[in-house]
Amino acid sequence: MGKSRRILPFVVATLPIQLNKYFFTDSSFVLGIPIDYLAISIYLSDFAIILYLIIFVLDNYKKPQTLLAKSKNFLIPLLILNIYFIANSILTSKSPQTSAFSSLKFLEFSLFTLFASVDFSDKKTMAKIKMVATVTLLWQSLLIVLQFLYQKSLGLWFLGERSFDGTTPSIAQTNILERQFLRPYGTFPHPNVLGACLVFFLIIISADLFKNNQEIAKLKRLSYQKIAVGLSLVACLLIYSKTALFILILIPLIYSKNIKNIIIATVLIILVVVFYINFISYSHITSIAERLILTQAAYKIALINPLFGIGAGNFIAELAKLNLISISEVRLLQPVHNMFLLVIVENGIFGLILLANYLFAIQRKVASTQKLILFLALMLYFSVDHFLWTLQQGQFLFAIVSAYILSSPQKTTITKTTA
Image (tube, rainbow, N blue to C red; front, side, top):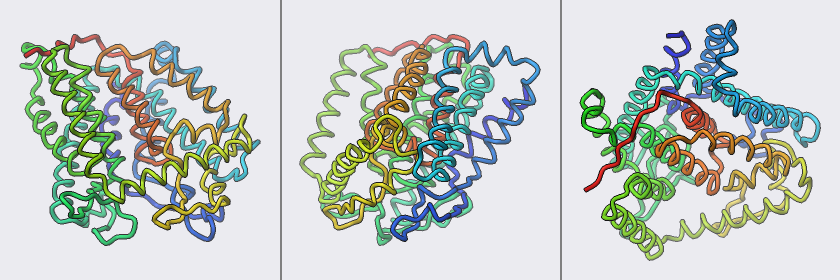
């Protein structure tokens, strides 16, 4: 086993650790306000990823045919996309420094996707990755439960946990039976990002739970996975990430051909929708209104340069010129909650076409029910949020999930259960 495969599980384990350092330059300020999205940020996970990339190159530079053989179908689309982003940040961006850093970040995660897709194809490495996913689900779920019970952070700064409580400005909250509760953050920048991590890792380990009895007997980690799944489901309820809950309810519909399971899942979806509509709070109305305002603003900004965009990372700076105030009287300085629309605004129609070409290359590698669910979950998150494109842990998740779909492990059979 190559050295890169040995360290890859440790690299993936750094995903939930939010330790970082921000460097605010002149272009990081909008209206005198420091914007995290625009700052140069270095994370612990960056060091782990770069170390992995270097070791992978040292392991494989004498046999490039291995990399080319396993990535021939998506290497060219990914390469063209990165070249376009870098060239666009230099030639057309209104803030070249911000765009250059965004493009280099995308290049970093692109290389990780490319290299990890090769190492994920190794069966032993993949088993270790699933163990890392299981352990991550366990400790994040326990942290979520404790944050919910105490309604504040636990002081785990060394894991990147932010300091917050129910009185922290702009903290995510929800109403349950007319009482306001803090939505746990774990060690992530927002409950929705945390929810995506839980969902993606749950799907990655879920295939083991659908194997036949003979295969199950060989999996010593299965009991831990069952505990992780149970805790994660409770955690998803506590963080109240609606997209995560929707995906979790959909999984039985895709995995099972049993009509009983399909009916149960359908009823659950209807109940969740009815509950959400009947008990929707003012904060949720505000959030929906803000997203609609940002969507309208994104269309206006896109008209500035529809072909090539305004440059990666420049959306917030242009948004500030529109002087938008939400119904809660908060100045709107955040990305639009639709990744495809954000790409059009910042990288133009050409950028979206190249991204779509790359996503199509990923879709062509969908060879199992599990990978289909992962790909559909990616598309849903791209349509309703921006963090897989704009935030470190979201970008890392995108890279891990993409690498997993693009990998070509030994074929295994997933036996669907019937009641």
